Length: 268
Image (cartoon, rainbow, N blue to C red; front, side, top):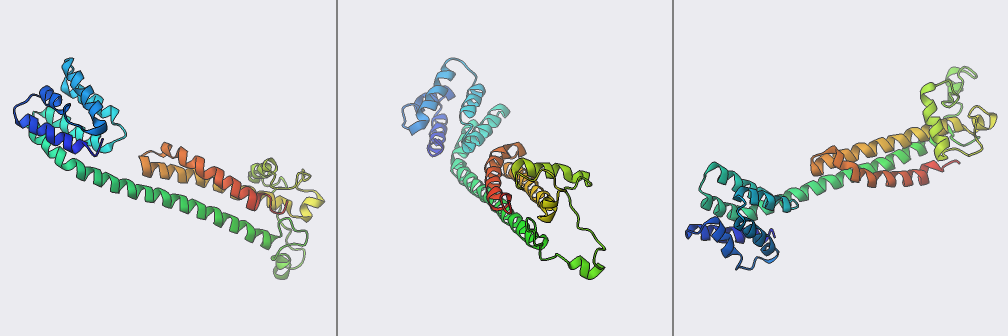
């Protein structure tokens, strides 16, 4: 329809220049083949024949063409000219000449928007990779899930003297803010199922308390980032953060599956 619309407008302008009324011009257009646009021209002609005002008819046509920004913009300009009492013939002719350029401009705009949305996906997937890398580094440095300790084991003793500083257990219950993260770890199986008490000798030996804390912290970072990135993608593509729900529904499951496979089950 967009391809045939400029030709239709030019023929409509020619009919108006020849002295035809709007109704006669649309009646003449019915005899020309405009492809899929023919059915819409027929509807417009019939509605004009029934006595429906021209602006109302074109507004209805514009609503039916809601998927075509080119046609909607053209109809909007046409209606503004008609309501303001401008030279409708020259307006139709000008719109017909500019419709092709408008379509090309909109296509370029859509292409750039798609590139920006694609970049948002790439950034989020990179964030997933960075998050996994952070956990791997923490696990090696702190010995998460390793009874032998990590690369930093004993460094405090070297600098502060043996026994001067006790290792922090985020899930010991003393740090209230960490409690939701520790419960999240149990819910998603970030630690072995037999670990019910993070202060038990077995849990402390394997550093499962800190494992639960860091896994849950990174997990929620990914989920929040996914929602935020989806909202930005929705704002870029459709001008509304709420439109980002569909992007978030793609990003979040991918992040969840990758995280559970690469981090969630690590050390369990």
